[in-house]
Image (tube, rainbow, N blue to C red; front, side, top):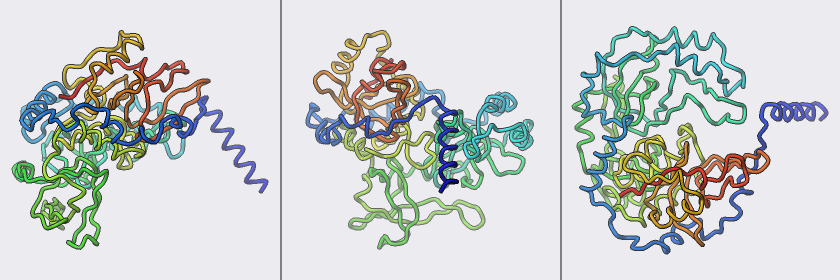
Length: 440
């Protein structure tokens, strides 16, 4: 018993020395949000014309073209002529990239990663390797990394859940263009639709550009509208295959009663692409994209309520920008992944120079419930409406600064007002909002 007490004391002492921040559990933060505010119906009832179509399919197509034009990180991998980039693409300077991460810690040991770690990475990357473009689909949730390693790197002991090497996870069957591999052929550097980075080679299913294009040209689709949808290998839905998240596109083979047969790309025994037919509940999907209405957006957002916050999508859930991207994917709107890119995907409204009173008034007067994004550096939120001239949002939030350097942890999708942080030196969410964008 004495030994256990000493070990507990040492752990508490080490933690207190490693961080000056005091963590506060989420129930102390959200206690002021009533049960009704956590339901989609409450906000739908306060919305004018919730079932009016905001954008038609053709208008969404035009919006996607504008988003693609305005976002340099967003790429249509299959239609882009990557051969033209072959000669002009400069090799990433990995010496500088490794230097950038040298100050970080191994999240498992909480020790600084040493020179041996980086030397091993450096030796596995051939800076003179020729670019050989190969097209592929991702198998499962493929994690896109800044460096070719599974070791999670963190910046401090109180951010062990934030792997600084994790760019994002690519959804099932995302198209990518692989440019080159590490010397051990375990990792490939790829261009995806949202980012560039390293992916484990085992998570890539290589095929010709034509075969992959044909798969995506099939417009007979179902879109996952549940938070997750289970896929089965049999019509009785007993042999589990995998689970896919909201916004995932499935290609329909046939519909039978309450079950949909879908065509799934898989890797054959000889590593080639082939298709398997699987089954999903009709109630978990929409046949085609959902109609883009305020009601539908709010309903989709609240399907994620209390979902765990997951920076970089390490565990299949989402961070703030991933939350927004998943919701709008259900309507066929192709958002970029990064919050800063999302708010600037089309003309945004500048709010940075307003005081809090004018800012709240602008949000309430110009924002539209369910289809308005609010942005502060590093974070994005979906506007729901207002109560007593107080704007409310739904967002995936890790935490925020409070009084006396306390860090209030939510770590989930939550409904909040914009006063969070008003007693901290970092200021409230409302004070820090700089941009607003109405997605229409």
